Length: 134
Image 1 (spheres, rainbow, N blue to C red):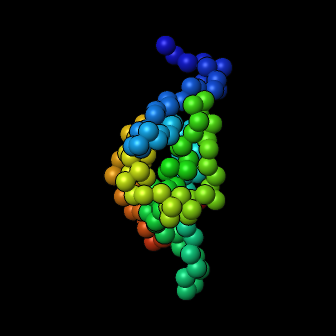
Image 2: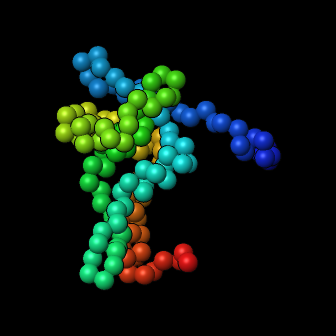
């Protein structure tokens, strides 16, 4: 069925999945909206000062915590964490639990290892001036 303007702009129900963390603990993880995905990807690229100006560098630092923060939600899909929680989450949650969350988040948001590599690669291309933006 061809979607019209009204259908295209209608809020979509995002997929929510329960993630078992062991010992009876669990969280819900959900799909990101397009805007959330863009902001997440932007958080993996940073502007740095270099001799003669500025460059963009890709960084997968805290990738897992950043992805968890933008996908952990309650049963209704409302996000539970804030961007400023990344460092605390990264340094307080075990790698095993964080990995369980990230595995589900990557799956339901179609984030592949190739996607992660491309983010870093594209930021490197932007550094060397290989950008198509004007």
